[in-house]
Image (cartoon, rainbow, N blue to C red; front, top):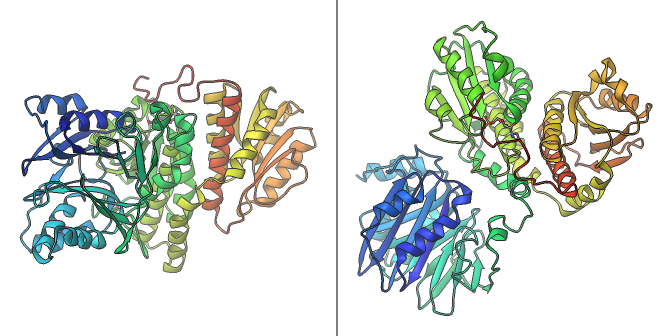
Length: 603
Ligand code: M6R
């Protein structure tokens, strides 16, 4: 995910900005840039790849003495990770850096292009600086132009803007994306999209709230919300950097579980409009002549794909098969050109998935990737790509990746249904309402986490775990078991609840732990009977469900809902937290479990 820094003061700005960006490297990025305003002139530098490339470009540049500067690390979402698309983006006398997404950038771009503005990049960000300069022509002050610009932007954004018109000020706005202002006793001012670049430089910080905007110089800070002036309350800044990088969580995996709500908002942004699904990444005519879909993936991405298999057939009424990429590669698959070949991958570099994609491409199939990393090998090879916009995932065990993959595949199913008219407008509208409610479903209540933390102590021994569920809760059971085994090193299997009696039930005794995903919306009575069969054989059972069930040894209550996807995402979080708490109790390195790598680029 992108990172933002800003600085006002006398020190070498290039160093402060690049060092600040280095503290945000853990978030992942594919290009970086800075802009420094000094003596009424702005100089800007951008480079793709690592920060050392930006350092190389700024080698000859110095900026000691009073001045202001902004910097950015970019994780591509709109447009390729090129130097032109890197931030800061320039107008004629102003520069901007931005995190988040401007949902109405197309409309703004069209309006400005009609007025003769020429755009250089493919980003949504560039509209901000041109819109600001357009507003400058008609507004009496620079701040009024900025305020008007802010009021015209829709979406989620944290923005810093500098302009030669006001050489001592940084203009800022925050909406749904974090932004912090900090200062020290030397009257230096810093901005950061997280604490890490501020620690060691600043002593006090103000965490901007949604809707707040304003400007700051060494003389004054003006803060507004809805045109009303506000007084910021600065508080002292924590001084532990590694703690700050994890936003105070014990492990990156825990942080990533908690950030699923905001990541989901980003993944959906611009893709769901009032009454329709918009996937601009799918070219016109791409779905014509497609009769069926084959999805290939590995690990967690395979589980997300299996979930999609149910949704695609049910909602889009399109035949779908899902295969493990390493199996697909060597089976001499029979492929026909009417099949759309989809690969799902977080890294975009998984060797088995990449090879499966090559096989499909060589056979002349249309190919689509659902991927998190732009410009990865898989993205470069596929005919079309939908990025999941998950940001970097540091925990080797995927969590937020799974959530966004499932959501994007669900959107894709709705998009096909819309295209093929296999869904009526009322049902589509209902689905859209549910999609838009998912970020809220992913918010974690303290009492739920506390309960899971407490009950986890009873699940540290035994001879194994069965995670069971039916329908889409079966792939979720597979994913829950994978999470647990990856980080706890305990043996866990996911099973379709109805399949236990065909063999695995032979293993059941009191030392066999069953984690049952008991959905109320989907095959409730059937799953209940399957759980009863296990209880009768003395299994120890943890039930995750909205409905109390007295045979449970342990119970985590989820919310009642009328839609299976809401239940799915809520139960997903419970299984992730369960794996996390068991592994922490066992003293394991949750973020870097033994024998595993984040990206598996070998067979
Ligand atoms: O980068 P990919 O999504 O292609 O990776 C596939 C698997 O290696 C990955 O999902 C793996 O299973 C994770 N460690 C799961 O937590």
